[in-house]
Length: 117
Image 1 (cartoon, rainbow, N blue to C red):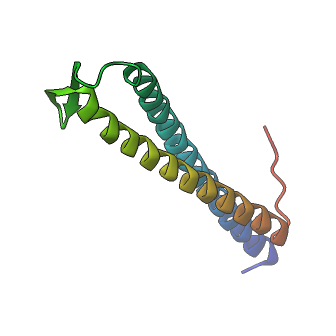
Image 2: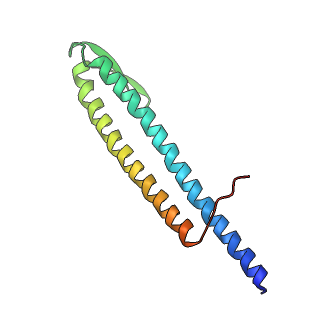
Image 3: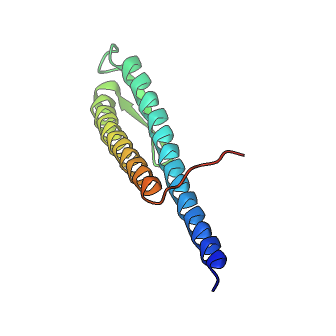
């Protein structure tokens, strides 16, 4: 193989690696957006239900089935879900930052410069 072929192959490999990093970051960002939206929905429902009487009836969707409950039964489950979503969100943000740092180190190591077209 000539030096030009090796260089072209190396450039193609770098492009594929760069694309993989970008796709991974995009997927994580999409998940973060989804979890943030769900967190906001939980927050809104919690804010709405908290001031209400615990005996007041409300409805909750569980696995596609609408069930009747009381506010006092639903609030703890909603709070647990909201707390779990916060943990997932924190984990995804940490994962995103880690992947971003990994990509930055890779770009520096391979002297990659992104050219926008």
